[in-house]
Length: 259
Image 1 (cartoon, helix red, strand yellow):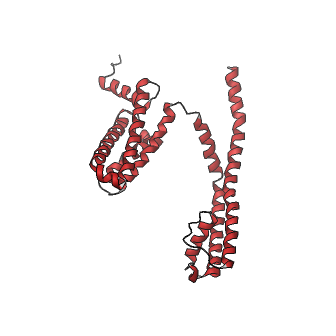
Image 2 (tube, helix red, strand yellow):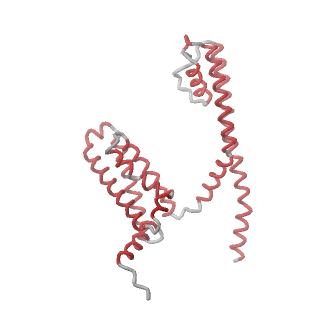
Image 3 (cartoon, one colour):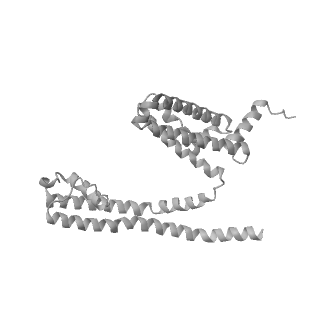
């Protein structure tokens, strides 16, 4: 004869349904409150980085940050306690994200400046996918992830080619302009080539001679062509993955219709 579950076991099961499940009213309410707390805590971190606000409301912001740290710490420990497999949860994606939610705040008391990492809490808002039943969108995210994975080697070869190109272009500009025009070394010239090729154009270094200006113009035009290459590679892989998924989707839809 099996014994009746204890009150502690019932409480853990109930707590698990509230914390980990979003199908019940209590679970949805918990997740919505959690997301509100996350957004508020990130807002506190933002405000604390503004000198004028930190000077006038520093104590209140510190108290608020301590409260959020305490709440998120308790929440994480409760997740570990009520989870049937705490180690699996701790190593899971959301388990690591939940840990990041309060660990930087604790580190801030020992490592000055690390409290700015509390803005990473905003990643926990990903739980809104579970609340709003947006799991279907994960399929599109998986397609994008597969496209990036399939394009990885091509992108790596492309980046190596770009790295070689900027070294050559920077060396040539160093010879054309020279130290007297701000190109004091080959590394500085390579930095200029990267900024110019990517069409960022900070303007801290610029060619002064007509040959250098003409050469820079050619690099700028080349930059527009290079930017299109990785976009095309990823787009082609994404379209390929989407087309391959269509037969499977048609089969699934046919099966549901037949059923």
